[in-house]
Amino acid sequence: MHRVAFRTSTLLADAGIAALAFVAGYFLSPSRLPNFGFDGRPDTLNLLALAALYTALAAAFSVLWRKDLSPWRYVSAPDVLLLSRIVLCTVVVFLAAVFLLDRAQTLPRSALAMAGLFHIIGLTGARLARRMLYERAGGGFASFGAVRWPQAPPLLLVGPTRMAEAYLREAFRTGQRAYEPVGIICPSEDEVGQQVRGVCMIGAFATFEEALADLRHWNRYPLAILLLDEPTRMPGLPRDLVGRLRTEGVKILRRASLVELRGESVADAIQEVTVEELLTRAPVELPHDEARRLIEGRRVLVTGAGGSIGSELARQAALLGCAHISLLDQSETALFEIDRQLGESHPELSRRTLLCDVRDRGRVDAALAQERPDLILHAAALKHVSMVERHPCEGVLTNVLGTRNVAEAARDAGVGQMVLISTDKAVDPANVMGASKRVAEAVLHTLRSSNGTRFGAVRFGNVLGSAGSVVPIFKSQIAKGGPVTVTHEDMARFFMTIPEAAQLVLHASAACAESEAGARLFLLEMGEPVKIMDLAHQMISLSGATPGEDIDIAITGLRPGEKLTESLLDTGEAATPCIPQVLAVESGYEGLSLDADLAALVASAEAGDEGETRRRLFDLVARIRKGAPKAPSLRVVAGG
Figure 1: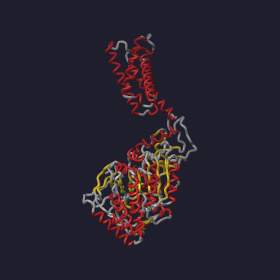
Figure 2: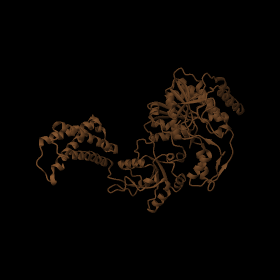
Figure 3: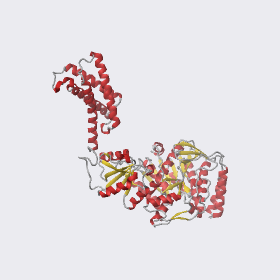
Figure 4: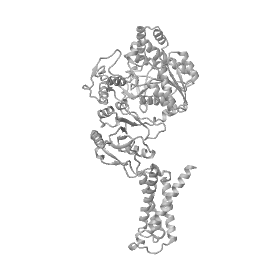
């Protein structure tokens, strides 16, 4: 009903503007005003007939191009072009109709041109006035009559002009008072000197430092800088300058993503940029429709929910509208923290914490019987290469036995789907952590479900900023003044951010949900590998220091079980794209029986025999790799 009323009122308003425009054009036509004097009375009957015809045609063309559906408060340049087309078609068809009726003898010369002019002015003027009222501003931040907030800290906008205009428009509309924009730094020097809603474009990326010096001279030096686009999409942005600004106490901000908005306006939802975001490649952008269909309205259980990946999976599941979330972890502190975060951000969400070790099959069975999940995201694992290398029995018990416990419990409880978080270190593993993850992948593929449970594993590389990863270590070393330790000059790794990794896991899980019962292995596209030495140089620069001068870089040598480079596919594996940024891996695990080998491996680990555990683990990996099909592997590249 409201929709019909809106369309009707819009159409009547446009028709009224058309009628008034024609009458005004008729009376003010120069042919009726010789020497600027009024020449006689109009023919009322002819005027009414002509005005009715003109108005009817204008209304018909508005309905044809559906302008009655466009809210006036969002008028933009494309709308003005469409309005011009409506007016032009109205004038042309009206002239043809009048000419056919009486060869246009009752239509004063130039009246139609005047009517068309008044018509377009009336249509656009009314809409612009409505938009100005909606945005509660008549110009820009520096224009006459605009609201100024001198108490707000100065904000410098950095990024493309269109994004600056969008941010300023939203700030006007919502009355955002947190910051006062004092200038824009744009990519191109050709735009410097122009204004966007009253805010001057004071410099380009290449002249960033000069623009800051000018702002300091004008006593308008920014206390915060808002990066309008992703840092990796602004290649001209000087990273060392950003690092120096951070050390000066200037906040480096970014706009929140759609997942992070949580109902806030674009102008209000700005967050501080992390070092990880400045380091990473351009993030993968994926539609949320598939992940939302996977999560929305379902009961989700996350193991390892207190860890870096597990906690992010829990946050994204909450944002995507899960009906209930179960948080399972054996760390009391980590479990308390993620439960507290979800309680603050989603107080209405049904949730439960489960202090449980995945090695304990009885506790896992009880947890699944209690929670009745539709989807299990299995992130619980021991993942630090050097630590697991020193404690192989613990790595096997958590990564292998824990995965089997959760998978078998999920099958027995009739859970719809379980997804294992795997790693690139499972490919041709050279360490216990990678080998245990490779066996965990195989465990899922050897399970058979009579009730339709689907199993999947998602393999990806290093995650920037995760607990114990290289970035937090470098941060700590830089904060202490160095040296920053790198094991080898040529060491390279695949990297992505924690939110991106979690998003891709859910995306791959959605693909797994559409497959038949059984198990599938997925691979996330990680882009090109990053050299750890380059990463160290970037982080030192972002801290405002100079590598080799202010902070040294020390080469320490490879650690046990460490490789120079990692691969995402083994020599006997083949991968084909299945959905954007996700590939399905032909693993060749079908028909593989591991029961006896697994029993012996777990027995040696439970006995604490590290040598025997290591030997049995790598013998089992060799058998698994030998069983893989000899198919050509697909090289994984960004955007492939």
